Length: 134
Picture 1: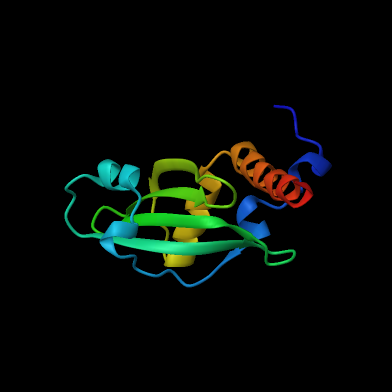
Picture 2 (picture 1 turned 90 degrees about the vertical axis):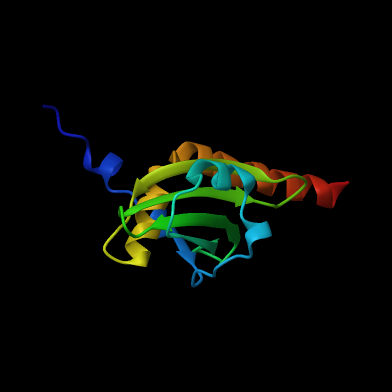
């Protein structure tokens, strides 16, 4: 098997570039409809919202919504950004829960396609710049 060059593999993962606030339980009407449909009638689900930021300047990245099933050690979640003009959504997607909540967030963050998340952030920045010019 060929080895990857070190400069290709020695980059931070997305979870190392982001930080987040303590998760908060949302009210029922704050949970995104697609997440509610995905979890269905599963009993014992804990819904949580997490504000996520880029580490460099503590710029807002978006909000993660997680539905944690402690009985099966699974979490379903989505990422959304409400920065100009409409909501951007990635997910919902399922992943295994971690040993603690921070690990669950890291697993969830790294389960999403990095290119899609970076494109989402770049689109939001470009829209903000265009709005300032207009």
